[in-house]
Image (cartoon, rainbow, N blue to C red; front, top):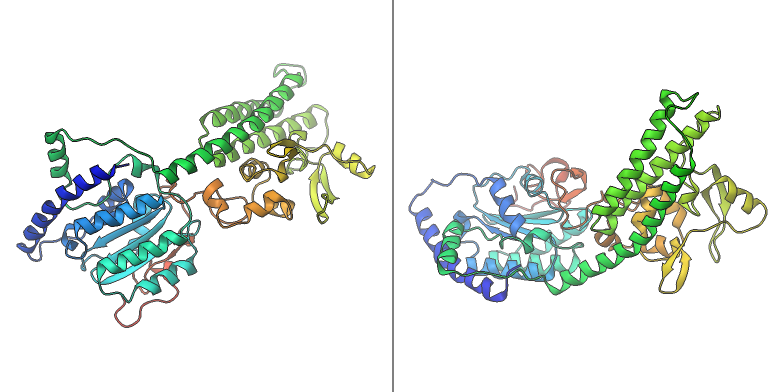
Length: 451
């Protein structure tokens, strides 16, 4: 992340380089080739704004720098590309998103035409269409792009990619190498500073992860104790290959859960840990059935009240205090308790209000529960609870990851997904062979002079 002084220095160096580039381009009419999107993507991974040298008359380097500063200071995943009028536009935004590999909102001005597209986790297709419609009539590039960015920053979810604080501003004006040489020759340097809002967000993420770490470490320990109590030996009499495979799978799941938790840096990373634990416990259930010569169990979610109870036996009706009845997966022990009119044994976690059931704790427990229950099952289980209500808010996916039944593919704004994203969730863009192409076309399309 650049200091204001460094930004000013970059701006003062880039302006003359950009002017030189423009003169050279003007002296070579017809020499411009289509911009390589991989180069645009490389610049956007370092910063939010890219201006092609052949489009420098659209946005000056100083204006581009100011636009980039605005986006970076807001800490939002908004990307802007300014390209010459002869740039091919078919699938442009989709291809640019794929090349950049970062979840976010992408806007592009090609000549005097403008459009945008976004991942659904940061902005809905309708919101993108409305945003584009509101700025498309502007003829002045600077005014249009600033209007686009100002409106986007008020509505887009997620945070800026971490690479922006590690690399450049993304304002690529053909003199980038020359700028680097000048900086090196002059002995200039910059210290990476984390913006206040990014620091606050990261602190919240760390605090949430530390709360989760306590709970997940308890889960991993409990699963390890189950393995110790198992008293299974691969070479024991009666053991067959299927039993040995179940046992090995359970051991692998235990090791994987520990490894994944050690490397977790965000709350949403915990989902993979609890998925591994759930998978390992099912393997132990299969192993127990084989050893006792019982039919193999049906693959079911873990007990809702405490996933450490293992796979559920059946679904039963349960009414939370002050809530409405719902069907939840229960283990045999909790099923018996409910049948006798007793309370189930519920997993409680530490909160600011003391020990509470996990579904009455903070939003960070969504990934923990999502790994155990996953898919569309979890929302139905949590309807009417504090955690369920938090997970249903638009900002939840941006802060704690998606993929728990409330939409999204698990990548928040600013996350690096590479090409691993659902193109059907990348909404907006030009229709009729324009930027988005095909199914990625905006709802309103162009009037008159559109592609």
